[in-house]
Amino acid sequence: MSTIENYDVIVLGAGAAGLFCAALAGARGKRVLLLESGERTGRKILISGGGRCNFTNTGTKPANYLSENPHFAKSALARYTPRDFIALVEKHGIAYHEKTLGQLFCDGGAHVIVTMLETECREAGVETRLRTPVEKVEKIDDGFAVTTPSGVLHATSVVVATGGLSIPKMGATGIGYDIARSFGLDIVEPRPGLVPFTFSEAEAERWSDLSGLSAEVVATANPKKKQRTPPPVFREKLLITHRGLSGPAVLQISSYWRHGEPVTIDLAPGYEVFLHMLEPTTRRDETTMLNLLRDHLPTRFAERWLTENAPPDWKNTSIQRTEALVHAWPVTPAGTEGYAKAEVTAGGVSTAELDSTTMQAKRVPGLAFIGEVVDVTGWLGGYNFQWAWASAFAAAAAL
Ligand code: FDA
Image 1 (cartoon, rainbow, N blue to C red):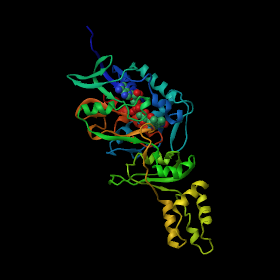
Image 2 (image 1 turned 180 degrees about the horizontal axis):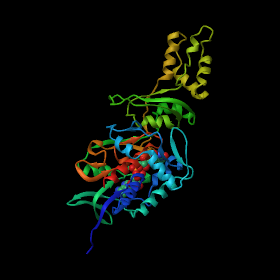
Image 3 (image 1 turned 90 degrees about the vertical axis):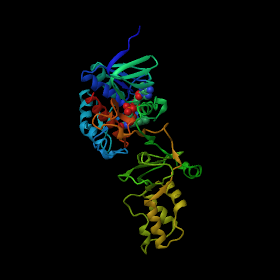
Image 4 (image 1 turned 90 degrees about the horizontal axis):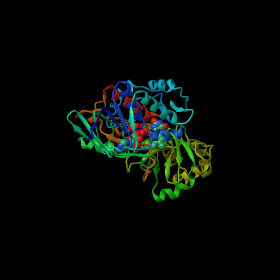
């Protein structure tokens, strides 16, 4: 007769959040089982930050996150800060550097972060089972039953750290949302975030031969629906691709974008581009306009932009209108490159369902959700890992 195995905590998903939560819970003396569907742990960490893992951002603030409730992340982020994670990284002798804007990367490969988390798990006595996809979680009298293909396991608490839908070929599944729904919890409709935009066929024909050209811009989303806080503006690089637009400015703004809405791009932030042409001594012609725009954009980009947007005549008002347009160029993407290319999944388990100090479902004590599966999505730049660490810490402290 087989006996059902019992644990204090079962953590579902050995990604960033799950590994860290399991290690912390184990260190607190809990009997922890970590279940992972894949062949190994921390697969997304390994491909993150171009293989060097941008593991945190020293400037992390709640304002760097999107959520239906922008206040939800505050408590967890305040209790486990970038400084805390840096201390752990330093304890393990991992060399790192700041690239830009507070983004910290490993000097070597991202695998050192996975090794660090695996070491923490091992030292904390965590039992890890790979190739074990969780099928469902049910409430039982004194805890939860977790069903896997190799049998049912019991635990007093369950932590769901199964991530979002981004990069299905790395094992992303919607199981975290399914588990939440099975307990009657609300989900904020998931959507790809930090993802390149695609052009319509006509737009692609117009722009795709410029693929590879980039410029420093300011990108802004223009949501139709009124937001509690206005979406931020991002001053970073825009990159033209074969299929549409990418680059950090575009990835950042994509998380705030909804289908059918335009985004606004300032192609020469902080500069007056064409207003010199209003002076009586300056020539008013296409060559002058192109030369002025070339100070801000690669020549072929400037030429193509003027083909579309040059003024119909050289009146003052027309020049002023072109000046306004270069600072607020409206682009309506046809779509995005979807979950196959999205670095994160925005939306997820509604924060209204969760206690912000324990990450547990208010209606299902003992069942916690952490990391990307929750409706908290960070900007590009190490913020998503910092949320994984901070939400894992909050959950582990309450187990
Ligand atoms: P994550 O997705 O990491 O882990 C979930 C785990 O659950 C996976 O191991 C999965 O296999 C497992 N799982 C799924 N279904 C299961 C089931 N049924 N049973 C058991 N296990 C299951 N962020 C950042 O801050 N800095 C960076 O440099 C980058 N770079 C980056 C690059 C690329 C290409 C991508 C796609 C993403 C990033 N990110 C990033 C985002 C970051 O990787 C992401 O936010 C975190 O990995 C989320 O951590 P989680 O642990 O929540 O989910």
